[in-house]
Each structure stands twice: as C-alpha cells, then as structure tokens.
Figure 1 (spheres, one colour):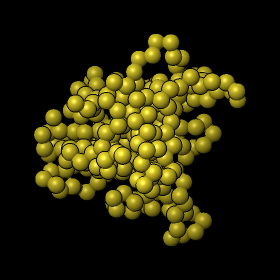
Figure 2: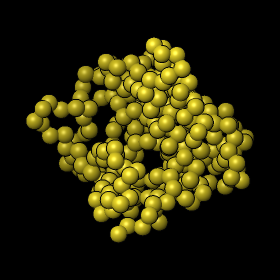
Figure 3: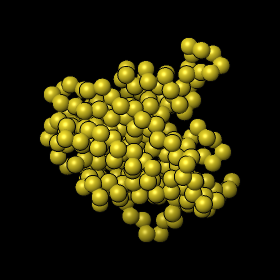
Length: 250
C-alpha cells in the first residue's frame, strides 16, 4: 500500500489472519519492522511485537471470526504509533503487509473460515497473482532454489481481520493499494527468541520467524520505492509484490 517523495518511511508487517490461535499463546502476536529511508541510507530499524492476547473475541467460536483483535485495532494503533514516532521526518510512507490484501469480487463465494471439518470444502480460491506465481515456479525449475518451502495459499476471500485493517489504512489514512500499470533483523530475532533452556542458542519458533518475515516485508517496501521489486498478477484480483528482480520467465 502506498501513500507520495523522499524521505520515505518503510513499514513491514507480519500480521496474523485470525489474531493467532486460541490454544497457542506464542501465535497471538503481530510484528512490525520500520525504518526511515533517504538517499539510499537507512536509519536504525525499529522492531515491535504487537501482543494480541489482551483483546479476545467473544465470538471466536464462530468459524468466520478472528480469535483475537477482531477488528485489527491493536495492530492499527501500533501502526499509528510507529508513524507518529517518525512524525515530521518523512514525506512518503510505504506499508508492506505479509498477507493477501485484495481479491476479485466473487458474489457467491462464502466468507473465509478458519477451518472446516475433514471432508468439507473451504471454498477458497487462488487469485490471478497466485496462479501467476505458481506458473512461474512450474515453468522455471532452474530458479526454484528460493522457493523450495513456498506454499501458496488461496488468497480469496480475504481474511476479515486483514480486510478491516486495509479499510482503516485506506479510509482514515489515505493509503492506496498498489496495482501494476537484514542483518539487523536477524540479530533482533535472536534477541527476542533466545532459548531459556540453552543460553546462547535460539529457539526457531514463532519468536524467531516473526521478525524475519516482517523484515522481508520491510525489504519489500524498501525495494518498492527503489523500483527494484517483482510483481505477480495484473491487479484485477490482487497483487503479490516481492523484493528484488526475478529472472525472466522461460
């Protein structure tokens, strides 16, 4: 999502679709990585976990309802806090959120569910951008080293919590959805996920993954403002944007 000239505040977010699992406390968290970029120079990054467990959803038993932070208010407040912390120091802001943000309208498609009983259909569908990415992976096995563990989840329909966050950013902050047409992060990950059982080592669980994935989202925002990003999809049903250029397809 993009709002418009340098200096630029880049924000990367690893956001949970459903506010985390009800049974796993460690999953009840979003993570924000932010930094100010000007003339190819990056100021020190800020990395902020956003705890969601304090906002349980009393309708969480319903299959289409988030478990925590139903309307994304805690994450929205955290984003606002980051932006306010850099107030007066940037002219442009780019936010990269690690989640599907937009999908083609399918009037007969049911709302997205967290899970369905075995043997039942989820009724999710891949978007054009996900099909484009999948097609590239199949047609270019020689370039597959970067995506060996990549699992493409159907992005339609958009998770309701994510949709509400996007609506807030669009309506209340004036952001527009994009359409076509580091080391510091790793160090912080080791700090917040330090093993309690074995000092000096790291537990590679969610505490390790979150700042890494948010850092990749931050790099996507950074490379987007530099024009060094790759795009999947034509924007008709959402777009996938990633950092760096991809080799030309076969």
